[in-house]
Amino acid sequence: MAGQISPTRSALLASKAGLKTASGGADLLKRKRDALIGEFFALVKDALAAREQLSGVSKGAYTSLFGAKAWDSPEAVESLSLAGSSDYTVDMQIDSVYGVKVPRISIPERGQSATFSPINVGARTIQAATDFGGVMEAIVKVAATETKLRRIGEEIKKTSRRVNALEQIVIPGIEDDIRFIRSVLDQREREASYTQKKIKAKIEAKAEGQKASKQDAQSGNHGSAAD
Image 1 (cartoon, rainbow, N blue to C red):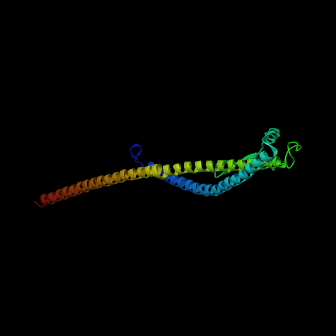
Image 2 (cartoon, rainbow, N blue to C red):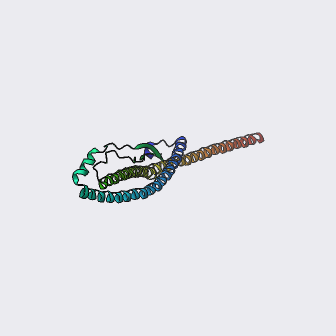
Image 3 (cartoon, rainbow, N blue to C red):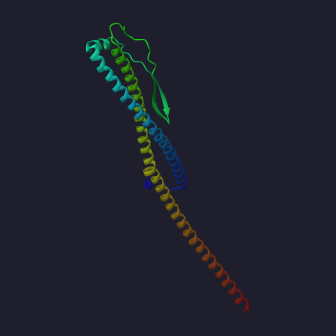
């Protein structure tokens, strides 16, 4: 970059301002990254808890399912699954976490009334249906938490790349420009000082010469008057 910049005082001031801006931007991005990392690790705990909950309710639900098939027959269980509603509605909003858009999902409470006629349906089949409703809720929680985790993780990577670009490329480049401009300006000042000294020396030498000539002329005039 040093070869493409004009070594002037205005360019030096602009480079200093650019260095201040880049350094401030790097500091802000590092603070954002640190905050996101803290949020990420907090979400890791939530994601692990959601996964553990999903594992627990899934085991219970499949145990209920196997019991229902054994006691009420597979046909009764399949008939109940076809009779249930296929819609599952959640309330999703978008939150901003340090500028990162993440989903916030609210799971409505399940109604206590059955969506099917309980006549000729065994208690174990009904329990299995209820347990799998809990599995669905756990899956939604896992999906919401891990989506947040993934997006924040991607933002951490993106922010880290920006910080690295500023600290390893942009800021060193500006510092090189500043050193280049200063070296050229210092060289120009030395050359100007040397030139001024030479001019001053010539002027002084000329003045001394004129003074000596004047003195010689005055001495000659005095000698002629004495004769």
